[in-house]
Image 1 (cartoon, rainbow, N blue to C red):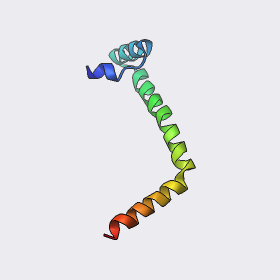
Image 2 (cartoon, helix red, strand yellow):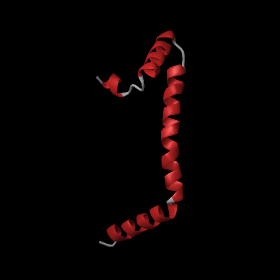
Image 3 (cartoon, rainbow, N blue to C red):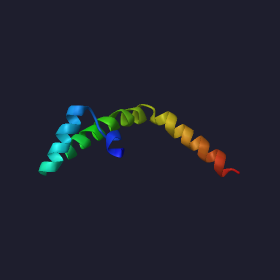
Image 4 (cartoon, rainbow, N blue to C red):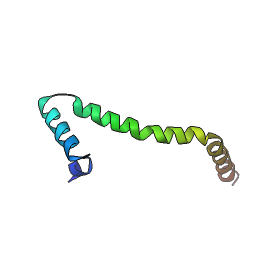
Length: 67
């Protein structure tokens, strides 16, 4: 059941499964590419809102350390 959750489209899953059975590294490259594409938007948002994130961090730190 857990393998179904990790699957992409049917063609991608078939390609990755067959490449793993043949000893190829296509599946690892596919997974790395997916992780790379997933991380870029989060990094961009963190860069764009870095000042707001920093001020929020310092406000929360001051609030919880002053108790």
